[in-house]
Image (cartoon, rainbow, N blue to C red; front, side, top):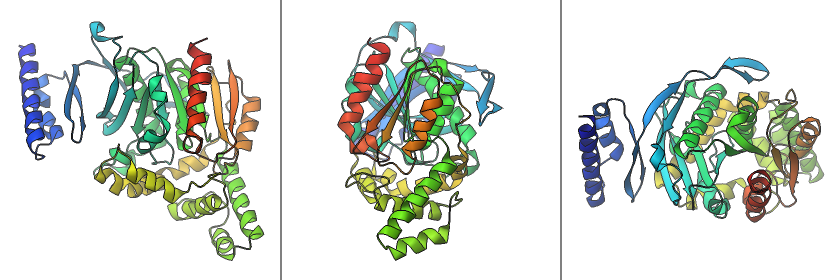
Length: 410
């Protein structure tokens, strides 16, 4: 009887796909919701990319893990949320094939989008935790991930409330550091089980490096290695260093407008996007975020040209970013990892020579005191806060020929 229900459900969704190809009035998400209850809690996962249609995935069995014990946050213990682990049938694991999909999954009770690309699904997983907060990597993947996709299953995730995961009905109260850490753990478990992997590689950029550092400290057995890029170490010190850098440069240039703006907002920390934006813009003006011709308006142009975002994603990108940044910036300003003395997996720090958003000198101090099975600093001499975009060839080469090779291909 259950098999019959599953077959009927497949035919309903398949029929919707045919209709969707003939006209754009069918919403596959709504079709899916209508048949949800008939599956007796055996949920089919599917993904939808505009113009491609519906790809029906396997029917997974679902089990809910109890919280995995005590987890450390800011040196204190907190309870992790429930992780949902989705298992694939044994006879369908370890099959080599190319993958190139975007899909909406549920993490922590909120629908969120991930993008999975790779030429061979037997390759290891590389999960990118984006910065901001609320500034996704997904629309930049066409610039900095093409070579990576030959050697990894590259996963980009638009965290709750931003990018493709923007939802006007999502309660802002759910956008907290603790919840996004729980979402991260749930996503890692989902990816490991979906692709039958014991561990994955993790890279965290800026805000994502806060998520990354907590993740590898609390759950080292989930990861082969960690890469911190634009690593947050001590936010309060870092923001003050960046502020003083911008003020000194403005004074050297006799830039009265910038001087007045910086003095008006005063020293960090800040609790509003306007002050955050003013400091970041002036730091960027004096090459403290980008070493070359990149700029924040330039980043938005890249988003607007991205083949991985539709028009709605592009239109809501900045408003979603501002909302999420305003909600989470207090967590960014409070971040301090100097209490961490040891990470139990290999650790790499990708440092931009001209990074004054997360000053590299603080990461160097942290690195010297940190114990790890292996640790290394990789300098990007022609980059600021975004080595992956300013030096994408080197960024990919180091991940493939150093991080991957040192860990799995010795």
